Image (cartoon, rainbow over all chains, first blue to last red; front, side, top):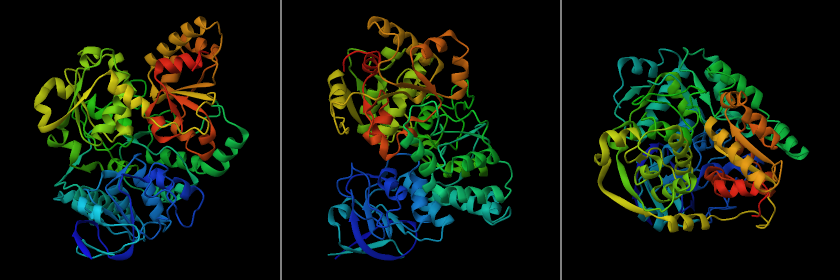
Length: 147
Length: 424
């Protein structure tokens, strides 16, 4: 078990299974097909993301460095949350980027669905965490990773 | 963040729940980046990246219905990105069904919403809102609430305005509230270059290739480019601005650049010179071989890499009036060389409606039509944003289109050669 202290962007607590992207997470490319075809498992459609491609993202603790890609990224994330198809939480090793922040904040203010977001968890967090590990996010921004 | 009494009153609900939520969104957005205050939006117009009425994005339009129903005080008027549909652009029956019956079912609803929210005109759907024919032209130092990566990087770099790389929806909220959180590219510190790019090319670098190389290297950081004024001169001529438009779009899409400085050319670089370079900035040297390496590394994701091109797109970002004229001249010369009257590959040139209207006043428009080229206001990226297009062999000289779709990149000269009947 290891704990990492980050900065809270959107508050909340949760417990979920880790899903890890070591490269930048392209929000539009990842969600586009799942949204378009109503995929209940919300599988990642980004062929350029070898870590996540074809893996189910719904309800997972999504661990990532930052998001990349189109400036529609924020509205895509907001839409995902509106449909209640969001990850359980988003955990960023780096400071959050403006597009991910926008999406997470829009979801928090304008939808009923909660998705805690913590950033600045450090490179060590992303080195340590692996798919399937158990993650819990505390109200104080402490992320606990268990094997 | 410290709010003024007026901003605090809005947050407290003085103008209703919806305005309070808009301000709360902007406050949280600023808090995420350590902003200490809001600053007024000073440009005349905003610009929104959302130009499409996608079925799957219904929650966005439902939220916009709430904004309209709230009867908010009139905010800043704005332009919008290009539309996703134009019947002039070649498409199959199946594509038409997918576009109209499955994907863009919310298009009419959304365009009506934009009229109510304050779009400047039904003609003003373009990613090049800053061209004089469109007229959304901020002044140096203006604070903007825009989204659209290619427009933001142009406004910051070439016009010297100040805007962060905002997401769709947030930009509209800034336009409605009339203020945005001050952080990142709105601050002097955030506009300092953390990369120095040293150009050592023997020939003028292709704008979209140079932008791609720099974008992929520096990602979201600010580059200071040395040696490009050798090719572009020291004045922001029409030719230089067109080049920088295409260069910037590639830096913003192949990376996440929101601002670049060109030594001896862009306004802040001319004014402040190398004092814009932050201490400890990294250096990236680019020569002809490096550009070739970058180009050769692009993956070809066509099912059949040897497929004959079925469609060519030129104009992402949208072409300027001068670019349209230049392409028409060059295409005419190349067709004559190849003994042809018309293009060999179905070809679409894209530009804003105001630019198209200006172009149609010239004889060049007649010539371009005669060559068989379709001239459209469409967004090629939106057109290709569907599973059917993945099966189509589309070629382009846009590095943005290459990045987000299955379109294959060629330089401008190569595209000209292919569409005029030369061998690939």
